[in-house]
Amino acid sequence: MPLNIPNLITWLRILLIPVFVAVFYLSDHTLSPYLKNLCAAAVFLLASITDWLDGYLARRLDQYSAFGAFLDPVADKLMVAAALIVLVRLGRADAIIAFIIIGREITISALREWMAKLGESRSVAVSMLGKIKTTFQMIAIIMLLYHERLLGINVQLIGSWLLDIAALLTLWSMGYYLMLASPKLKKHLN
Image (cartoon, rainbow, N blue to C red; front, side, top):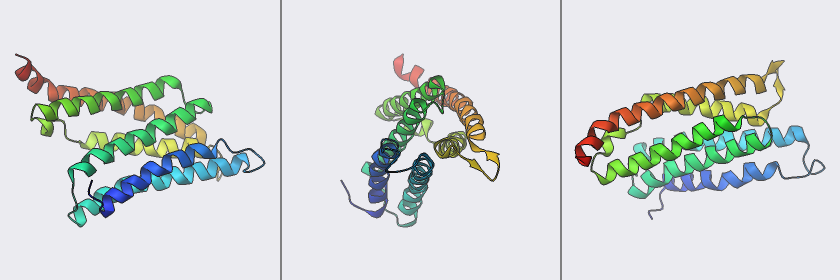
């Protein structure tokens, strides 16, 4: 396991997951509900920034590694799944939306692994659609974790709408990746 800056940042993202989850288990005497929401949203925002930063630094510093390529998407999926589970538990997100997003992540991860074994990993490389989906998803989760009104704006409502859009983009991107992989899978199954 190469210890380079991008991989250390990815490990930091993984370590931040229990932090934003634990915030909601503190008593209201330890941390007010408002501060819980603010802290959880801030920690998730920091984790989201590290998602961009580790990839940027890997390219900029030419510090790619097979381990980093494996760990980065795992960290992303763990972070999003943990946040969605917390949001469902808090009644801020619908369980079916969480199921769609988490289910898609598992499906596409399995598809990518299978395609890699077939030597066809390029056919399911990350697309712009996937990046747009991730952007909507991250912004929605931050808003839903924050949950408070901001400058008179109902952040919870906007976050819910963005999460619904992210779920639709999730289904669309899953269909797109399955469509791209389909000819390669048919070729190897025959």
